[in-house]
Image (cartoon, rainbow, N blue to C red; front, side):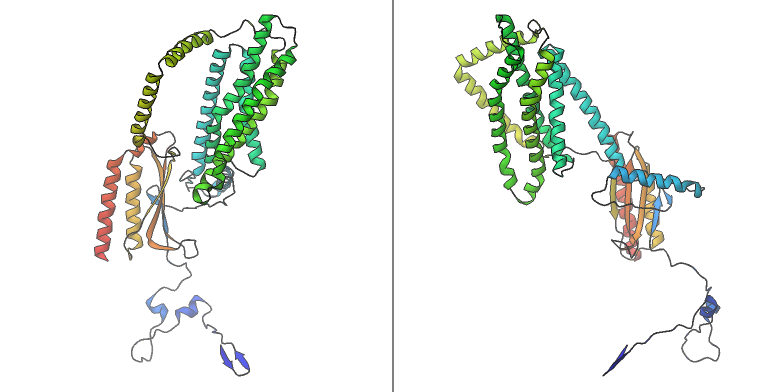
Length: 439
């Protein structure tokens, strides 16, 4: 544009080229003047085409197209994955001869496996809890009350957290796991005291009604349950005032723990007595005492009496155990969370600046062969470079690799294939050095 004292004049460049024929007739500027300079069509083919590749993809050792789907943070990974796979299935009839592999770096696979493992663990845990309750309580009605109260407390806590806007994540599950011991204790202690009082009144021939006995037995342990819950709440409340990264990290765990504790207390004080009245009113439980209980009481009493009679030896043994625990502590794992066996890996390398597209493709293709030769590796995908309009624009000397392990393969054995990994690293280092020297 040109600005004058009172006017702005806009300058537009109007190209005389309207077609490839016009462009082919454009003369080339050469040193010196010639009467008939060569035209662009004389030295090259002028055609409609696209620009050269600014990236590429390697899929399972060969050429391919890679589509990366990024979801919003609050979107459900499983739902997004199912929707994408349904869309790919709908496109498949119109793509004859094109192989579509939607299992490369599929986070939904890890979630599916985690849910299967969690479901299996919950089923095994429930079976073990039922066996233990049946062995000690020795009455299916009494065991059923505890079996109902335990999951009811956790479900109630989950509903409360859901209403508070929380989602199920690793820290929330960790809070539930920490609270599980107290939840089981609340579910057993109340029903155990009720059963004990019912048996006592049956043996003494008391004329009190079952409802009255259950009410009095529940009131006996009510103060203990409430006080224990208050103590636990006060003990972990300072976590909410920690602040910083540690506070943000531990708050969901502590919140889930506290909600589970309060829900367990509420169930123990309301639902458990009601279930006892419904199931134990007409049940003859006075003669159904577990044979394990007398045996355990007898041996526990003997050990307790010896411990009380020898306080010095008891304190000495306690000190030895504390010292041994302190000595073992440095060798224990310091990780708060378990190691998650994710079967999808993301790795990238950047050859020297100026590495050509064919050379980067060759290196990536060789890496695909090396990695896919490892037993257990399911597939390999990589994209070379990144479009200039993308969120992370890179040149063709940048490669991002997506490796997936077969869910049926042994995870640890696949990870332990270090010999192939070392050969791959040495090969890539040699190729990178060759590229650098060529540059």
